[in-house]
Image (cartoon, rainbow, N blue to C red; front, top):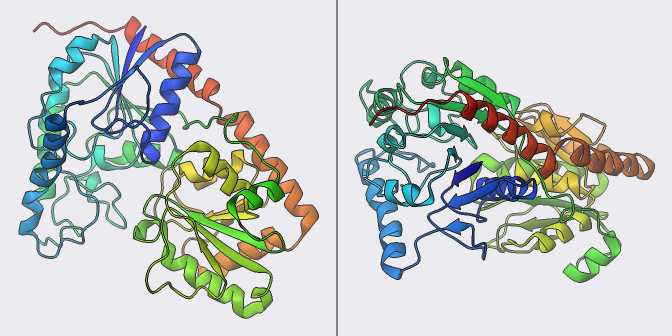
Length: 421
């Protein structure tokens, strides 16, 4: 079986890391897995990407040009919003690789035009990493549920008109994807439910297969050693927060974390805790958390990430909306209990008060209470840590994920009849 994974990049970003782990998992069980990406950072010969400076420059230019229509919406809130209207030239590259089945992942940044999917003439499995595939352009809809109808009047665009960019994108998807041989895979039960309730995918087959984690790379490291290597204090309990663009992506809940930690500081924890942040450097005017804060900047290699998770006593990700967060998977694999809001795919990874704490959505006081609950009892903390690691080993290994995808691919190929060109 020859499988081609399409993702905008190979290892940069959460969706990229998730896709690349699947690629490695498929290879480990004997499947010929290849990746086609727009930006390549790894040295993997099975990953294809533009190599010349001209091609790379064109790819970067395409992102800006693809977003130009958004300039007409002065109230646009500057969230991630993809239109994908530019022709892409990807079909000859796919033909050269000659896959039997194509597994789409995150294809943002003008990587693939919406209309291209209908021209691939291969069975498609689309692994969703956010909501874009069934919305009118947004990647997370927030409180809006207009994707269940036909979009339009998009709140992220600041639009009050039925026929706006979001309706145009939705209509293009409806027309182009009507006859696709498409199976949808979601990593979380929340995203499966959202996809099934959407107007575009309500009649599609939707399978639930969680993302994986390399439990050989992400594993507990002795905390004292990890802290020494990262130059972090040995005599404090450490709260960890981090993601790509950790402090600037509002969806990750940085502002909610700040309020929760200020509450903790006022309730007697101010001398025993310190905060560690990765994914951002210290700003010129750092916010006041009530605790000393260590900014580690961007960490991209597995060893550095495993070290920082292992150095922490608790990982906090107060996201407002989330699929199956890679950072939470990485943390539990390193035996670090997690505190999040009970939203999205968090409950797929966190068993409340068993390997972490699920706070009531957006309630600052419960988020603070969860952090305190994880930290205040050493014997309980050890049990939480052990269960976190066990959860990763039992449900989220690359081998488990790869075998589930292999079974799905085999089933789809067995019944596939190519369309006549």
